[in-house]
Image (cartoon, rainbow, N blue to C red):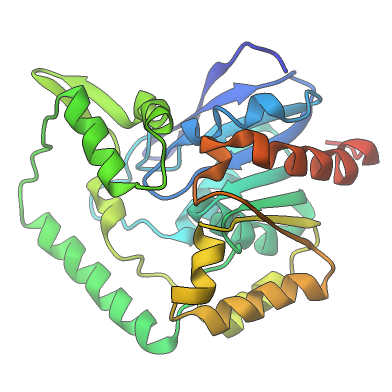
Length: 304
């Protein structure tokens, strides 16, 4: 892998989507999508361990990291992120590529791969299932709460709280107990902006509001069935994958989504680790992802 890492910026109607690039210009294109409230730094430790033949572009999703926040009055939801991915790959002039997605980024990857199956040649889902099925009452409640949260927010003048670097680390660790302190320092490289008197978090506070655009199990399974690319799911046994079968009220829905992958002979693997195992312990995840990309993409010699 080239040691050089470069910054990238793709213009969007309200500003720019920023990110980082690894690998040769003519390498097999791989788009990397981070989880909720994280940024593209989540792939800093994993990508250097992956096949050198690929060109990895990891983006800060809108409202995260160094990317522009959405315009005033706009909501954050998966379909909007899917549209952003189209903008990014159009800007990169990619017509066919692989996607690696962690958590929320994996769910965006799942939706994108079902809507644009002809553009995706492989999908890697890190501690997620590619879809987040909600039950019908939850859809209605979340829609109302998300709208109410936005309207309340618009009535206030929100001033960002200023932290010392140490306090920012403390706060991030408290909110992300599955993350090592080293991982927090990596994410804060793009997660903080220096201001007079200290630092503020770069992400848009509106990402905390309820996602008002949700899909139910039936819709999830329909979209899943439209994915044409091979899929690798890597679940941390102490992460989302492990906990959902003992704690989640959505357990039955996720079992059906998981069965959908098994029925199509996709790969589902459990590894020792938590929700951020790909960042905390990349050596556990890298061989699985590398073998998958090598087998399903690189050895196929498909045109980009």
